[in-house]
Length: 527
Ligand code: HEM
Image: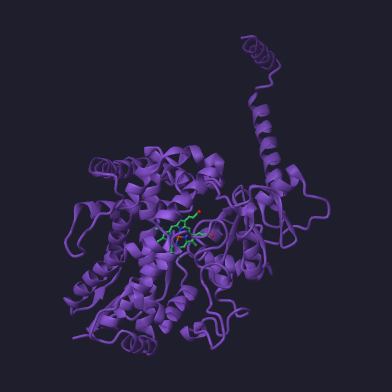
């Protein structure tokens, strides 16, 4: 009350002295504008742009710390343009121009970012405990992913979820237990292609197959690929919308003063999506509760059976289940589409894969999952596609520095976002001979050599990430992709469609997929 009276006095006095004359107000505004401009320029005129300049001016840097090289971008917004379409291309070009391939700094509005296009530095970042967190993203939080593995802060809750998923969903025994389902799905896919002698676009079918596969592993629900089903359609729409929301660069994440306005309507769209996801997944959980008789058939049963400190609230269970469906669906379908595209584009590689299939499997029976380890050339071709077309070229979800640290000799403050440009590393002539050529043979181990692993130990190609937050679904993902591709190539010869060739242009959302969906013709091989 006292403050109000004091304030009134100040205003009364100021207006008596004509402090609020139009002229004075105009001058004050000019001075404030000039001061803000000067501060914005001061922040901006720093390697890496405004977010780095602001940090330097506010907090200073340890004595002797060199600034990380990088583009300044524009005042206030920094290098938001780098994250516009095909961010992996733009970031690689910028790192090249700034001679900062090992480590480059840039600003996304007020967010400090570092990015590397070098495998040694990538290893330093991804394998460090300091970068075991994920940066805050409004859409991820609103879509509940902070209660699931992907965006949960590094700590006990995240570790518990990873342990549960590793034990009950991603362990070799569990992957083996779902083999029959993948066989059924492969068979349904083959029948659908068989009954089609015209050109066809494969994406829709691959995404439905992949969704059915995840719905079986996670919810225990079985659906037939060629008969439309409302549940599948509804979930497909929810996943598509979630993918779009998470894959969109949200300006409010980086310019907090924009947040109240929600200019891209991301918050609005999230609030309309979340109740639908809640309703869909809650219904499945309730059905499982009713049907339970102590046994565990699927991942929902596993979560319901948890006791003690591992027991999850319903809201957390929904988040975890939704994430598994969400993450496991598109990544797999996107990768299969790239593989088929490369097979159509390189008939010589395709026939070598098919020769190998004929030798290992023969034409008298269908491929079994146990055949896949013997299909060395096919596995090499899958790796070569992962090299040229990693579904997450920037490893999908960035990392966040929990504390101050040093990377490649540079000081990196806590709160900095770190990215790895896996796409650029995997196409760098320093690490790969003829990097733009499609040569699966490069992954065939010679006698006495150890096979190249793409699972995160060698950062020249780590499409599933590496370190504590590496993809937990990598074995399930690779098993599914390799088996489905083996089945499709065993059954059919894949040819370009008459009217369109294969266009390898990319579009980057949450995953990087073909900008123009693949259209093909198939010719049965096993009559
Ligand atoms: C071809 C298939 C896949 C690719 C290329 C892929 C790629 C990735 C990448 C690059 C990351 C980030 C890793 C990092 O930060 O180091 C990731 C994280 C993750 N992936 Fe995958 N993934 C695939 C399949 C799957 C599947 C099938 C599932 C589950 C069903 C899954 C679940 C997850 C989860 C939960 C995370 C977050 C991990 C964490 O933050 O601790 N992924 N994935």
